[in-house]
Amino acid sequence: MDSDDIVVRVLTCSMIDDSSGYSVIGISDNLDKVREGHYSKEDGECDIIKVGAHRYMAIVTNRKCVLAKLINASRCLLVSAVPQTDTLIKWTIVGPSSEALHELRTTMRENGYKFETVASFSISSKVSLTSKEESAFNLAMDLGYYDVPRRIELDQISKIADCSKSTMSVRLRGAEKKIFEFYRIFSMGDYLGNK
Image (cartoon, rainbow, N blue to C red; front, side, top):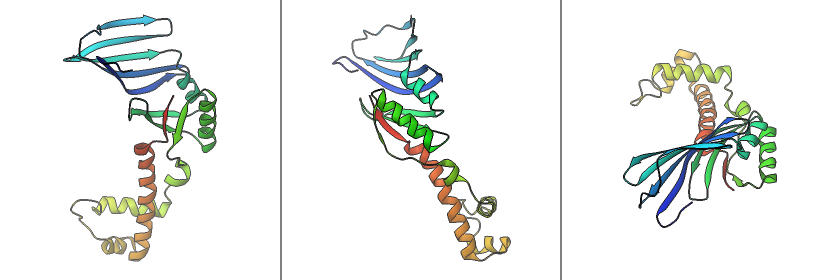
C-alpha cells in the first residue's frame, strides 16, 4: 500500500498455527501521520514502533490468515516470504513430498492466489548422499580440500581413501551437486507469488 506520503512494505512473514500468520511490515511516513502503539481487533493485532526518522515497523498478527491455513493443511512449511516489488513476493516453501506441494498449489489457485513456480525440488531424492559420497566429502572437508587456500589436493585425498583420483573426483562432484541443489532450494525459493 503506497500513497504520496506513506509507503508500506511487507518485510517478512511466517505462520503461527493452522490459521494465523505473523508479519513484519516497514512503513515510511514523510508526514509522521502513523501513530505508535498497540492495536487489537477480534481477528488480529498490531504493534507499531518508530525505528527512525519517518520510519516505523509494524508487527502484525492475523488470526484469519487464509494462506497460513492452506500451507498448514498441505503439511508444507513457509520458510521465507521476501518482497521483490510492491506486488511480488518471493516465497520459499518446503513440503514433505511433490504431491503435498502440488496440493498446495492447487488450493492456492482455488483461493485466488496467483503465482509462478520458479523451481521445485525433491529433497529426499536429490540431497541424500550415498555412503561413499558422504565418506569422500567428510574426508575432503576434514583434510582441508575446501579451505582457502586449499590444504590438500585431490590426488592426496584419493591415496588416503585408497581409490583412484577419478573415482574420488566423481564421488566429490556427486556430493557437491546434491549439496548445492539443497542450498538452491532455500536461496531461490519454490514460488514467486502475489495475490
